Image: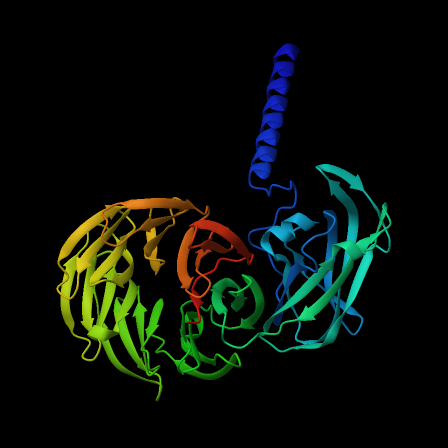
Length: 481
């Protein structure tokens, strides 16, 4: 009996050991190349009246490869400190340099006035060719005053930017005194900007496309999803489903100027807006409805039941048509934008999702069949079908190629119009979803729902050139053109 129990204990101990090895291997596999400086993809935040996001940059392009282990990230309001959640416990210079900017932390805080930020340096080291040389920390509690008082109102979401002077942080060869400054967000004028909505944070982040770094954020209640920018009209339209509203912002000031209520019976899931900014078209996926909203007087001036589970909508304004993909019906509906009457219907070979109009063709991502179909415009006759990656969701055009985000395979496929095969697949990992193109800088932005950020693809080389870390699932991403 004792021998049998001893054998049982040995088996249990072996299983525990194996589980621990598997767990550690899994952690290492998902980590950064630097080893241990791994960000939390999605932060578990504390609640509060307002939200603060803290990003970290480098002061100089070159410097010693320092490593810090930090804790107790807090912001101060008249000597009262409020905790933020750190995005990573370990910060290494080469990780910051690789992306240009990383998310250091974020959290909910009470509305009020704030003057400073602080954190504790638990350990520090110098990475010299892979050898970690530990340093003595002079004044482990690092406290930094804001250049001006930060006033946070209820439902605000703003960003702070720490700049790390790694060369100035070294005190001789064995002592470190982390030298950082902090700046409040300062959003430049409309040019070279993109907007990305994060519904779970009630936040829209603003990205500088010339730097591929976050430069600010806006607090948008109601779980903001679809974004539509109209630079000619100086407007940013934001769909806020939980508030049953379309919120209208001025692009040059990022100030909310209007809010149009949507009938409570409509659970809007997608939106597009006419180029003159007068009409918004809304899809209600669960209610199978298309709704037209007059943005000038705030009234509903048209509605039609459409298909089964409408997923996506493309406004073919030059043809005065709306193309709507319906998942369960496996059809594309063409709707007259004025009368809201069904003009034509075409069948797809799989579950249709995102669409793109190009060269008198309508390209449709079919998520269930891992293919993209092309239909002639205006008739809608099926022309050809191309196999792509797993679960294609969205399409974008740039540099003479059509790009397809494949959520199931973590890739972006390249398709040249007129050719009947995919020329290449770019591995981005995660779960790529919404995309948009910066024509000026030749970037393709790919929102990643799983990794919590945006991949930046260089259209000249078709390689991933940068990563914009958000720590939250992005929904809509748009470049102000």
